[in-house]
Image (cartoon, rainbow, N blue to C red):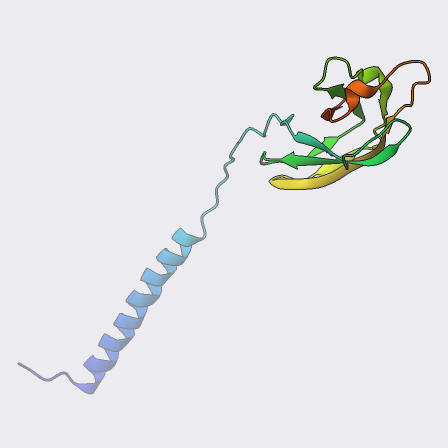
Length: 151
């Protein structure tokens, strides 16, 4: 094998640098290309259902009232708003008239976040009206239920 002269070694080094520079320039040009594109997805249809709850203390007697707390559970993946509440009373005993009870539901538009439980959405009052003309003994021990819906 023959030894390269100093001039040949310099020439070879310059040629190598030139090849790297030319190759690097090509790579640089490749990586700086331009382009465009887009993507699409459909949003949730919304309108998920929340579960509403009414909570109040027992032991009502004619002429008494108790506060009612309204809460909501949202198991969906998006938040929703609970608007006006409507409440109604029912009982489990045929002689205990639901008309003897009054319930209110004071609420505004409350945002219920996704995947939450027990979000307060309003308050109200449950009253057992005292009838001066009817015997209300059928309500002794009766279970009073407050059903609540959102409008």
